[in-house]
Image (tube, rainbow, N blue to C red; front, side, top):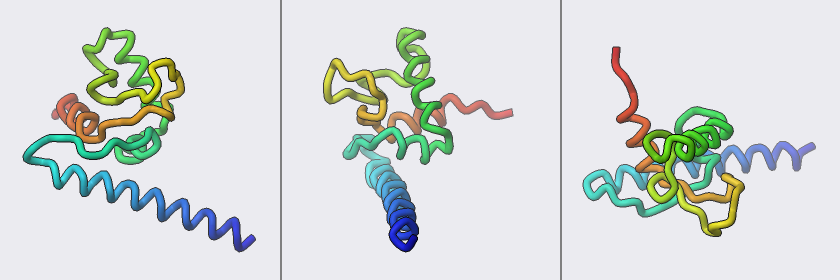
Length: 108
Protein backbone atom coordinates (compact mmCIF):
# COMPACT_ATOMS: atom_id res chain seq x y z
CA UNK A 1 0.00 0.00 0.00
CA UNK A 2 2.80 2.41 0.79
CA UNK A 3 4.37 1.84 -2.62
CA UNK A 4 1.07 2.56 -4.43
CA UNK A 5 0.66 5.75 -2.46
CA UNK A 6 4.25 6.70 -3.17
CA UNK A 7 3.80 6.03 -6.90
CA UNK A 8 0.75 8.30 -7.00
CA UNK A 9 2.62 11.08 -5.20
CA UNK A 10 5.63 10.81 -7.51
CA UNK A 11 3.31 10.89 -10.55
CA UNK A 12 1.53 13.95 -9.19
CA UNK A 13 4.83 15.73 -8.59
CA UNK A 14 6.06 14.77 -12.06
CA UNK A 15 2.91 16.18 -13.69
CA UNK A 16 3.23 19.39 -11.69
CA UNK A 17 6.90 19.83 -12.64
CA UNK A 18 6.06 19.24 -16.28
CA UNK A 19 3.42 21.96 -16.17
CA UNK A 20 5.82 24.36 -14.44
CA UNK A 21 8.45 23.60 -17.08
CA UNK A 22 6.03 24.52 -19.88
CA UNK A 23 5.16 27.76 -18.08
CA UNK A 24 8.82 28.70 -17.63
CA UNK A 25 9.61 27.93 -21.27
CA UNK A 26 6.75 30.13 -22.43
CA UNK A 27 7.70 33.00 -20.12
CA UNK A 28 11.35 32.81 -21.19
CA UNK A 29 10.43 32.97 -24.86
CA UNK A 30 7.65 35.56 -24.90
CA UNK A 31 9.70 38.09 -26.88
CA UNK A 32 11.34 35.74 -29.37
CA UNK A 33 8.30 33.45 -29.72
CA UNK A 34 10.72 30.65 -30.39
CA UNK A 35 9.96 27.16 -29.17
CA UNK A 36 12.73 25.74 -27.05
CA UNK A 37 11.00 22.63 -25.77
CA UNK A 38 8.41 20.21 -27.07
CA UNK A 39 6.11 18.31 -24.72
CA UNK A 40 3.88 15.26 -24.82
CA UNK A 41 0.13 15.10 -25.41
CA UNK A 42 -0.71 14.62 -21.75
CA UNK A 43 1.09 17.81 -20.73
CA UNK A 44 -0.67 19.85 -23.43
CA UNK A 45 -4.04 18.45 -22.39
CA UNK A 46 -3.37 19.32 -18.75
CA UNK A 47 -2.30 22.86 -19.66
CA UNK A 48 -5.47 23.36 -21.69
CA UNK A 49 -7.67 21.69 -19.08
CA UNK A 50 -9.07 19.11 -21.49
CA UNK A 51 -8.89 15.31 -21.69
CA UNK A 52 -6.25 13.84 -24.01
CA UNK A 53 -8.97 12.65 -26.39
CA UNK A 54 -9.72 16.33 -27.11
CA UNK A 55 -6.19 16.68 -28.49
CA UNK A 56 -6.89 13.73 -30.82
CA UNK A 57 -10.08 15.44 -31.98
CA UNK A 58 -8.17 18.66 -32.69
CA UNK A 59 -5.63 16.70 -34.76
CA UNK A 60 -8.46 15.09 -36.73
CA UNK A 61 -10.03 18.53 -37.21
CA UNK A 62 -6.71 19.81 -38.56
CA UNK A 63 -6.51 16.95 -41.05
CA UNK A 64 -10.14 17.15 -42.19
CA UNK A 65 -10.06 20.97 -42.54
CA UNK A 66 -6.91 20.90 -44.62
CA UNK A 67 -5.04 22.85 -41.95
CA UNK A 68 -7.44 25.78 -41.61
CA UNK A 69 -8.45 24.80 -38.07
CA UNK A 70 -7.46 22.33 -35.38
CA UNK A 71 -3.90 21.16 -34.77
CA UNK A 72 -1.67 21.09 -37.83
CA UNK A 73 1.39 18.91 -38.26
CA UNK A 74 4.51 21.02 -38.65
CA UNK A 75 3.03 23.96 -36.80
CA UNK A 76 1.45 22.57 -33.62
CA UNK A 77 3.02 19.12 -33.46
CA UNK A 78 5.56 16.91 -35.17
CA UNK A 79 6.10 13.20 -35.59
CA UNK A 80 9.43 11.56 -34.86
CA UNK A 81 8.49 8.77 -37.27
CA UNK A 82 6.48 9.80 -40.36
CA UNK A 83 4.58 6.50 -40.23
CA UNK A 84 3.56 6.91 -36.58
CA UNK A 85 -0.21 7.10 -36.04
CA UNK A 86 -0.30 7.14 -32.23
CA UNK A 87 -0.73 10.77 -31.15
CA UNK A 88 0.71 10.04 -27.71
CA UNK A 89 4.09 9.62 -29.43
CA UNK A 90 3.98 13.02 -31.17
CA UNK A 91 5.84 16.06 -29.86
CA UNK A 92 3.72 19.15 -29.27
CA UNK A 93 4.67 22.82 -29.40
CA UNK A 94 3.07 24.40 -26.31
CA UNK A 95 3.66 27.97 -27.48
CA UNK A 96 1.93 27.56 -30.85
CA UNK A 97 -0.96 25.54 -29.41
CA UNK A 98 -1.72 27.98 -26.61
CA UNK A 99 -1.36 30.97 -28.97
CA UNK A 100 -3.83 29.36 -31.38
CA UNK A 101 -6.22 28.60 -28.53
CA UNK A 102 -6.15 32.22 -27.34
CA UNK A 103 -6.57 33.62 -30.85
CA UNK A 104 -9.69 31.48 -31.34
CA UNK A 105 -11.21 32.55 -28.03
CA UNK A 106 -14.31 34.66 -28.59
CA UNK A 107 -15.28 37.40 -26.16
CA UNK A 108 -18.95 38.18 -25.56
